[in-house]
Image (cartoon, rainbow, N blue to C red; front, side, top):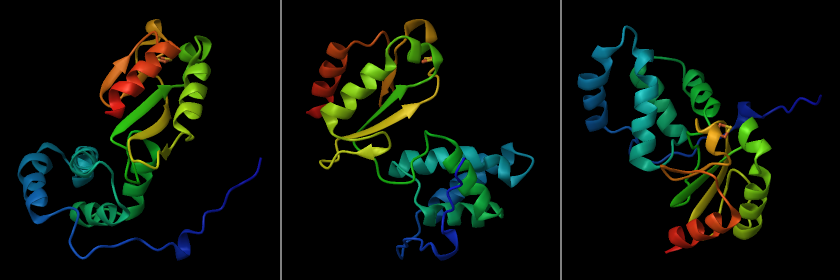
Length: 175
Ligand code: FES
């Protein structure tokens, strides 16, 4: 097994002058979220969801701002964001396609669905088309194993997917 060493010591965080986690957002978290949790870290997941919902992704600068707001180490925020496939660390396409790659879908043809999408869109999982329309992901179980193979197109799950279904969904989301 080969270890991949990331050069995080010299990694530069892209910054903009204005904060991603605005004073208004912080106020809302203070009033609505923090009182629900015994420790500030308990509010991390709902804050991450809110930031992603607001911007479509979670920039590294925003992770630092969240860490500072919750008074936790930035590495905890980064660990959480990168643990879950559903959090995006880069801007995504307008339609995020998440193909289930867990065992039931794997046994029922997920590879054909994924290969068709890779070839039709010209991208690999975790990439976005140049026109910014589609991001492709390979996800773990979507909770509908009896209707495999499944995939998400944004928030909608589509079951028993055929290649014809995939083509139709791509057309619908291309407009
Ligand atoms: S394995 Fe694909 S939905 Fe469960």
